[in-house]
Length: 447
Image 1 (cartoon, rainbow, N blue to C red):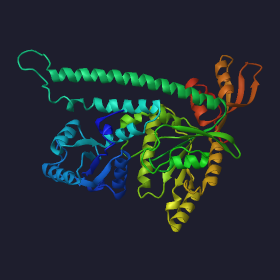
Image 2: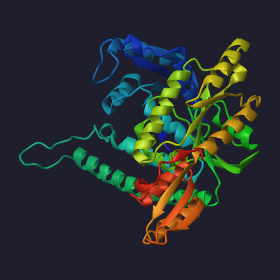
Image 3: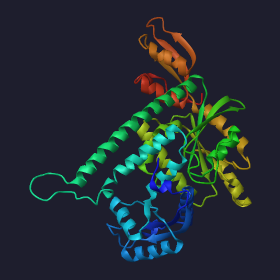
Image 4: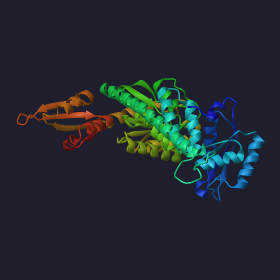
């Protein structure tokens, strides 16, 4: 992904940033201001100023009123700013008009995150996903590119003007690119599906780390797996899923997956485009939700992560795997706060929680014990009765599940099987052989 902004990052840009708010309940906290500054720095820009801006009277054409724009123009001039970031949503017209008023490049929150993702993507899959998200975003903003051309000719008839002709041509071109990118990503999803089936066939449980961006997922991933993936104190240090194998004391080999972080107001374009990556989490045997318990907005971050996971659950059609929470960054808490959170983690049951510090490795052994316990209880043992015609289902159970017993009914020839399935296998079997689980005995969790 390339853009005018990214091409100039080497200078680097000096950015002025505002977070618009409309009601007292929307007034950004200090944590939100810090997060926005971090996003700006993650783009490689110097932060000239970051401030909240109350919008008392919304301007449909500019979002901001004339007096506010004049003040912001002076602030940008003072810092020699070349970039203006609105940490909110801008319409194409508002973005164009603010650029004219301030005479600098303007991007909104979605554009900012897309630019960061464009810089961070390293693998072919990551670049495909970012490019698809960018094309979907740009398609909705084409009108601002061609406003210098007339939209209609004068005179009689229904002939289009050059602006409309160019607009339609660009839409067709973008639609063609989107279809190509979606085909390429479908190939990626099929490949990853085969890889997941291979891991399932080998009996290797998959554990996915999810959480808010910069919560410490990659640092925890390194601590548990003994790996050295990039772990930096910045938003979206990880974009492409990383898989490492580890050996647990009582369960043997497992696979850990480090995933992209979530964020407040994650653009829908990104959720759709990164589905090929995020399916690694939704189809895992266990989720570890890594939470930054030192953050003052930890509860809000948990809500945002849960929202994205539930969105994926609906789009993929798979129920969420079992989950445990890793309460991270205990090293940044006071002694009293650590003790209080440790007691709270012991009482926490749904989901199970463990207080850890990925940086100092405190609590890692306890977390591994919780992972083993969760994996043991995540399997479902049930009794199935299969007719002779259900040979494909029987073969699937032997390939992917754990068949404990099998007997044949002499009178009917039906097979009675006791089988243990993981969360992912249970959903896959139900999708491939609908109706067979309806006649099964009630599942016994953790048997």
